[in-house]
Amino acid sequence: MAATKHISLSKLQSLIKRNLEAAMPLPCWVTAEIGELKVNYSGHCYMELVEKGGDNGIPCAKASAVIWRNRFGMVSSYFRSETGAELSAGMNVLVKVSVSYHELYGLSLVVSDIDPLYTLGDLERQRQKTIARLQEEGVYDMNRGLPFPGVPQRIAVVSSRNAAGYQDFMNELGRSPFGFRVELFDAFMQGHGTEDSVIDALGRICERLDDFDTVIIIRGGGSQSDLAAFDSYRLCCHIAQFPLPVVTGIGHDKDESIADLVAAVALKTPTAVAGFLVESMQSVDAWLVAARGDILRLAVGMLENESRTLREAGFRLARTSSGLTRTVDIRLERLIAGIRRMSEQTMASLHYRLDVLDGKVRNRSQAIITAETAKTESLRQLVESRDPAKILALGFAVVRSEGRPVTDAAQVSAGDLLEINLHRGVITARAEKAGEN
Image (cartoon, rainbow, N blue to C red):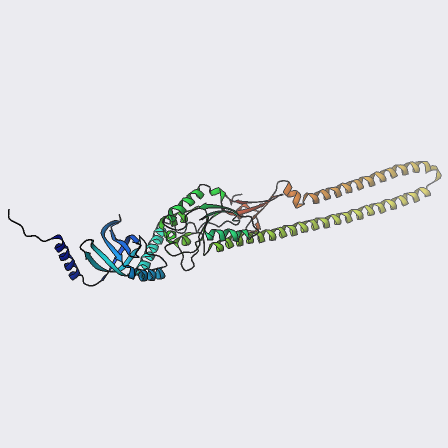
């Protein structure tokens, strides 16, 4: 058999290397996603760059890349200062690469620079895409449209038990004079598990909706990558559709997360959330003090009016009794004068008639006095029956809506918050059906 022409493997590799280096002698900028990233003990950063195609996200291109130690410190530091995040898997990046081919290790890309503005732009594009999707699905404004409770005392908190932000929140509430009932639903608030952990906590709260007035999501500040979970579609979709008003205090001042945008109330820090709750309770407390003053003033006014009516009735009774007495006295004097002028022959008859008349006068006077006394007692009982405390004790109540007394069902709409003042205590209720007589 004739010998075929051949070359060694090393020569083939060298030939490939020379052709690649000749074809791409200069660095070029390449866009890709970081599939994997690892910094070894020597300080070199090894990455796998991928390009995903189509909606299924299957890679259509893949290449190994390295940032040598002498460049990695500077590149990573600049990237972190511009984006607030560390280089990590899953990021879309614009990298400046040179093609390198090694006889033993094959093809790889040597990264000499990374443009942080491209990554920031990609994060913002993803953010705007998520916002647009929530708006298209009609859930973006759902939680913000929920009425915030007037007395937010039963609070479900989603946070990490050991987080400084949670401790600051509890300390701020503890300094207030109000009795908040806080229950923590512990969750991861940083890292890849944040999204699933917070969603799980919201699910546990949703199973006990009647136990809470509002949901608080808090964590301290962090880098943009630390807070990236709060821009995720799944988490923000859960917050937007949550049936209780959600308050966020995610703790970054420069930007708002999408979770902030869809929540009923968005504040900057956990301490600010606690301050908001305290201020809400202070407003309710001030309203109650004012309402108590109004009730006292109304009660005093009613008592003064009834007392004045009673005094006037007494004056009228006294005048009537005095007039009747004077009339009777005059009649008696006239009768006595007539009797004296009569003859002695009719004295016995006149004495008899006088006795009869005197009895009638006494009976009439006693009947009048008895009737007036009964009227006085009736007036006294009427005054006592109008005492507000007794009226409330009979089962009646004073219903108020937005601080105004409700006297007509047409004044109340379904969903209105009602305050029902009883003989002992106050009940807060929400109207399910209203406006009907």
